[in-house]
Length: 285
Ligand code: PMP
Image 1 (tube, rainbow, N blue to C red):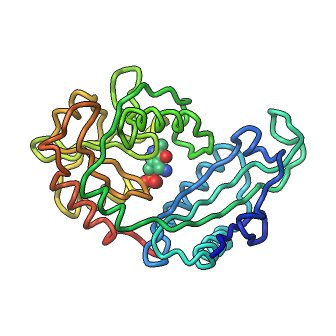
Image 2: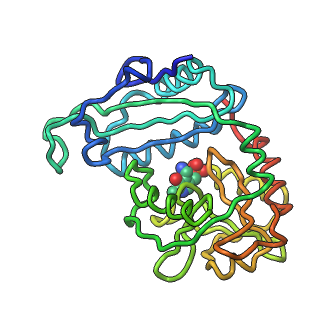
Image 3: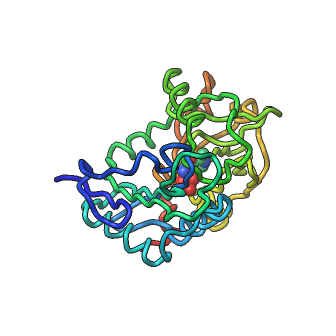
């Protein structure tokens, strides 16, 4: 079955789907994106993703390309046309096409909109979660506004590859003060030996993960104490558990950080419970 993408107003076979070479997303990474999980053919936590999208767009002064309900229709339609029951839907909005010049186009141009969807292998993800992942720490060399979900992901690309080169699945960024900020494509968490879940507070230095937000609700429901504070790699290596959160991985247990095994080297009980309970707290549409 051929894959279908939505590109600037029409649904196209992926092989014929293309954008103008002067799209500012291509020239300057001048755009934003969202990734939502698809479960049972439905989109997970769309209202939260759409709220974050609107915030990213307004921080960059890019216009909303169409009303939210229309965008939602397009995203559902791309999921439907690709027959995705479990996977992700990707939405990208750029400032649009204009002659290459760093400053914004003098006369407003319509934003560029691309939506794709693809299936993920559920059994494989479950197996990865059952085994747990390794993470590798490295300096956070990103810009100072990573709260904006921009498509400018070169540092994340390099960090992820550096992690892979070191036999790890995810990178954990460490700021100049020696504290973990977040993963290259996830938020970072630990569980202390006395059972408190710890994650860094929101600021311009991390992305406000939707999964992070929902996990906080799950923690409250399970009566697990939450501490929003920075932690160091040294504290993480001594923690009972560690995990990462993202829309495509939900709660993914971490079993090693650099060369240190976490806990007994297996996914921890809190991480597993959060993963199991997560979708009870999600909104499906
Ligand atoms: N931080 C970064 C840098 C990310 O790329 C992601 C995934 N998009 C996250 C955190 C997690 O965000 P979410 O839970 O909304 O997927």
